[in-house]
Amino acid sequence: MFQNTSTGALVPISGVDPLLGSWQHKAFMPAPLPDAMPALTASTFLAIADARAALAALDSTSRQLPNPTLLRLPTLRREAQSTSALEGTYAPLAEVLTADEDNAPTAELVEILNYVRMANLGFARIADGQSITVSFLSELQGLLMRGTPLHDVSGRVRDGQVVIGRRPDADPAGFAAHAARFIPAPAGIQLEASVRDLTDWIQSDHLGEIDPVVAAAMSHYQFESLHPFRDGNGRLGRFLIVLHLQMAGVLDEPTLTVSPWFEARRTEYYDRLFSVSATGDWDGFIRFFARGLQAAADQTRVQMVALVGVQAELKERIRASALRADSAHSLVDLAVANPSFTVRKAEAQLGLSYARANKLVGQLVELDILQQVGDSVYDRRFFAPRVLQTLTADAG
Image (cartoon, rainbow, N blue to C red; front, side):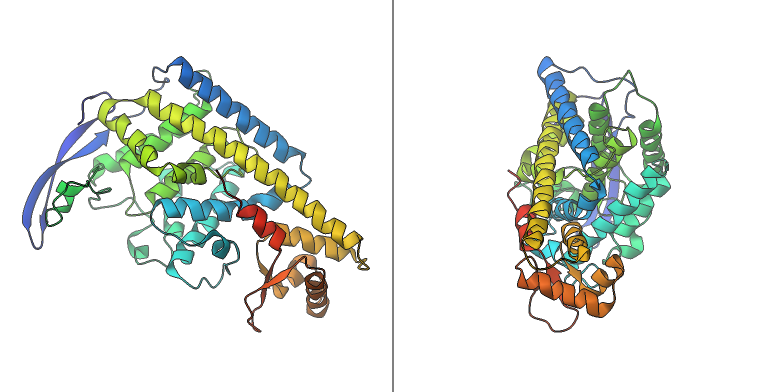
């Protein structure tokens, strides 16, 4: 199946299965990324231009908002749910949005909320001028896997072989490597060097040589083909897309949910990645990737504008009521920025006493602006149904 040697080479690997005995196979080691764009067709250049325009419109809209970071957490939770679903870790979106970040009730929610913590750390570090390095990526991956069964082998480049997917025609009783859809680079010095090459490439100034959308596509492919960590590579690789665009100055406020579009087209997404390795089809992958970024930017912008509209709508309900406290409007802002929250959080964020915050939450419940999550009398959590409705709208 591997017909093009320009994107990488097959290298021998071997091992011993405790039940089946020794085995031998081949793994794919990608070549270093070039310092120029691959040959692209006119239709791909048009897709890239459309993606750049959509990303510019998203960034322009976020700049016009009084507080664009207000919308980061709710959209991040949506991205976390979708990118985790691509890797087989699924939880209903409404459950993700209203979950307690400090006390996730399921293993699935632990992983999904880890993504939110990881993303916030990554965005903050890039905003502070930190470079994307191997140690930085390792730190992010370690945070992503915190509290999971693989936590102890995380936070560093893997030291063992991994395989990806399973061919439908594979022998279910055979070797895992023989049944795999794709086998990334073997562990060792060459893998570590290749990951360093990738981070150095990302840091290099490609201005005038490689469009930022193309650069993000190329680095995403390279990361996924290397698969440098024991787990979490898909989620971290898709996060790297947004991080790359933030670092390149394409997005000032990195509120972009890329995974819902790719999740809806997961088979083609995996096929496009594979086709770069197998046949060198950069053109098809970059065109697919650019269309995904365009759709993601358009959808995120629509959702951003919708959330701002909901925020104004809820404040108008307060103005139409007998409630006159300015803190009520601040509580609406809190409910938009935090898909669910406790009275203690409202107390801390709004600078109110617990009694005043509790009363204010109750008043907004009476106005049908807020509802309680479940019926617990302890650690009560609240949410704004209109906000949840907007966030769970179909991404298309």
